[in-house]
Image (cartoon, rainbow, N blue to C red; front, top):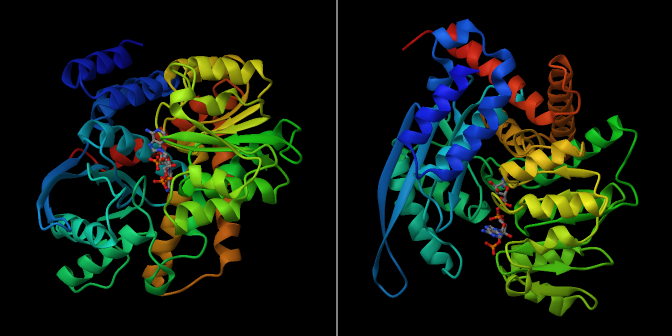
Length: 448
Ligand code: NDP
């Protein structure tokens, strides 16, 4: 369709350096062709949807433990508020730049729409690396970051959460600074400590939701996870709770990884040891291999060139939970060759476009990130609801709602895929289902 091509060409010219953003757009826009009628084109809905409502970039000055001044770059992309306040995580990682956050913010619009909850799309972060920093350095950075960000957010305006490099500790420091500057004790951030407005089951939500989604997909095909070997990449928040839920459903996760290497533990990843290493000691995965006899650590230097060694371990289901583009075409082909039946994405856009094509062609049960990892943001919205009503719900209440939301997302994506004569194609189903709601809300709210 000429309209889609026109928008893709224009964006390619406008943002040639924003590779991840262009990749995300190239994945989504072509799948929307069946719904893009003359009304949408007249309203310029695609041009409006790919352009953030607002981007904020700012300098973050802070002082390290040696008394030296450090300067970082902070960002918030307020992408789309048609369905509710901007909602999306903050990422602290040296690779953060505006293009990366635009990709994440764009994905977030569709993901948040799919949850069925009243949340718009946004994303933010900084090129700050919390690794190797002392607690006090992390605190000073978070305070400096919030000293600017607080002007742009609020409980009904924009509600950030965590992402890579931003966990409970960082959210706590940022929340303290927001309160200090504004005098407001409100649900402006999610992923908070239970002592000051956090929700039970938020920590677990993305990983648990991911496995619920995979289970729903597999049940629809008459399959299940029980007794099955699974591979997981990453070893952060999403990966840890993905492993935990896999065990609970009777599956056996045998790998985890980080940016320096992977662990292969054929007996199954010991989640208590993993939590001790990553959440308590904040150590590297080599420590896991020291603590667990029989577990093997394979450093990145020993991976085959251009490959992620996690995906060469034979498995029934694979769960990429580390970062974008961590599963390429060769990885996908090897997974398929080794009999993998299911890939569910915990990380955002972990598979390259070529990998996605290969996975769809092989007709695997494939849960694309914007559907499969939406449990985190959905539970963040449940945290917002608890904050607004000054209530605390039980773990079972929140987990029960998470499970229902993931089932609804799966059904919505699967039904939409069937409606457009591509049963099983949850990429198309999730994109169209997410898009329609946002597009209709934008049109109903007029041009402003
Ligand atoms: P964490 O910071 O808790 O963990 C990230 C993990 O991924 C770490 O093990 C990290 O290893 C690894 N990783 C990061 N960058 C790379 C890289 N370039 N190569 C290899 N490994 C890497 O983050 P989360 O678990 O929160 O997030 C993981 C993914 O899930 C991200 O894509 C995020 O956007 C997505 N996500 C997270 C949600 C949440 O609720 N937290 C919600 C929805 C999606 P190392 O320590 O060596 O850097």
